[in-house]
Amino acid sequence: MDPITPTKPFTALFKDGYSNAFLFLLVFIDITFFFIHFTNTLTAELTGTAKKPLLLMDADKSYAEIYQYIKFFWVSVLFIYLGYLKQTFHYLAWSILFIYFLLDDTLQFHEGIGRQIVPFLNFAPPFGLRLQDICELMVSATAGSFIFPFLFIAYVKGSESFKKTSRDIGILVLLLIFFAVFVDMAHSAIKLGRAVNFSLAFIEDGGEMIVVSLIAWYVFRLSVNEGNSEIYLYDVIRGSLRAA
Image (cartoon, rainbow, N blue to C red; front, side, top):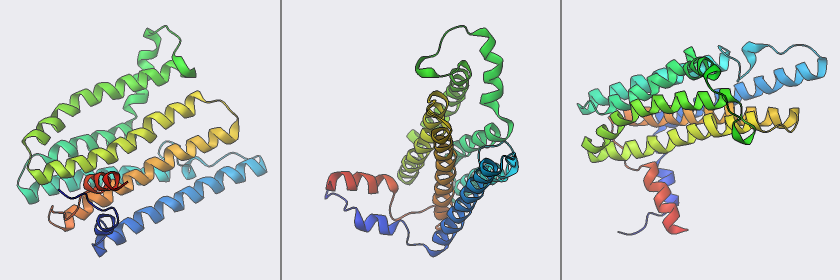
């Protein structure tokens, strides 16, 4: 099989006008929240006043957080819709994952349960992390161990198009985990002043927002094309690596 060239496939990912407009809207709102967060923080620093929590990206139940909730909700709904279009239950496995993300964000499962576990542990975490960070990671890993078997079974038994879609969503979810877990832990462990702390927090929350927007765009793109796609992200990446 000839290697996939990187230029044409990347262009093919953005052939649908409706989904392109949707992606533009999502990212525009993301960037607007970035600007509001930065302006709110800078104003508080310059004037010595308190930040307005509702305008921050990293504050619970802020406008930016609610926006993330909405995206998670619609991603889970669209996966159910894709299952209906394709007459299969396999897409429900992905819907379950994003319902968990939604509930975890709104109800703070891993933070709350993590705090309950902390008193039972007595060791010094490595790399400057807190016990709270380790406990939160344990809770998230435990939740993943329950959800992953559903995804694995769905992948094994799913159609070829479902497998390709799952590989693409898996790539985006791994990118989301990178920002939500690894950048979050770096933010907790690295103590190099307020500027670095602000930058890592901004990268963490901003990265999560952009990735969830990409996931919402991807699933919407599939939905308006009746669950079909001419090109897949995994193929684009594979073709780019082969051509390098």
